[in-house]
Image 1 (cartoon, helix red, strand yellow):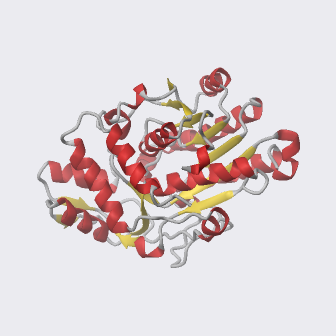
Image 2 (image 1 turned 90 degrees about the vertical axis):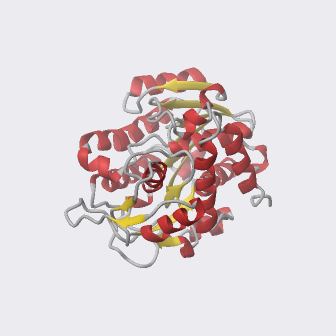
Length: 359
């Protein structure tokens, strides 16, 4: 996979105890990278990081807050990573409404701290900053947003990601301009993914974890925004895109120091109700109940991504359709009911996905 480009390299993954960060850390470890994780303690003992006993598999497991520049910089100075994947974030829309200051501090200032570490440590050569598809100024258009569209955000979470993208662009132009790569030797990219599902996510107020909790408790599945449409994709889809981008950045850092969308085929842009219905059918249990609340905080109803750039420049596209993504997700949660170590199961799913990546 990826021509062994990560083999033997020291890679810092911020947010490695989280959902996407844990899956990425497993994948990088499989490819022979020396993965250094930097993150807070996992938010759930049932989450993917804990379920896989990932702390036993990593080159280093460092606990720290991305808002703490000195601690983050100390980790970079100690382990001298060549590559950074920055995933650490406050990733929930509703939590951001409750704690806007913490959300901006984490998503904006945390990203600033990563970029400052890169600016001060010459060991770092390639950086992929993970933000969100919600960074765009969402006008509820039916066509997908392109990387050149305006940044924005109605709610604090979306706004914090839009702000982060503007800052990343500023740092890239001011300190790491591609045209001056011979002088600074850094390649900085940012990536925006659609709504990600997959095994091991136990976050509160997130669709799939909430569904699994309701099913396992024998309760009706209450969905608060059944008509909302999102670009659903399995977690391995955008991660494969990040890894592919990283490979290309090593080959041609001048061309690939840019922003990229990673989303599914437009056929996977389905409503929340459709996704939950498929989950219930495949799980073989559960009943869906419309729990719409007219007084709930604002969440955008329609969001699509245009992934033409990734397809053309990276030869990347989502490989699993919505049904397969749902099935792989349910398979993980069912397996976790009977297993105290999910690492091999995650490896199995990564290999199944990787079979399609052979070029």
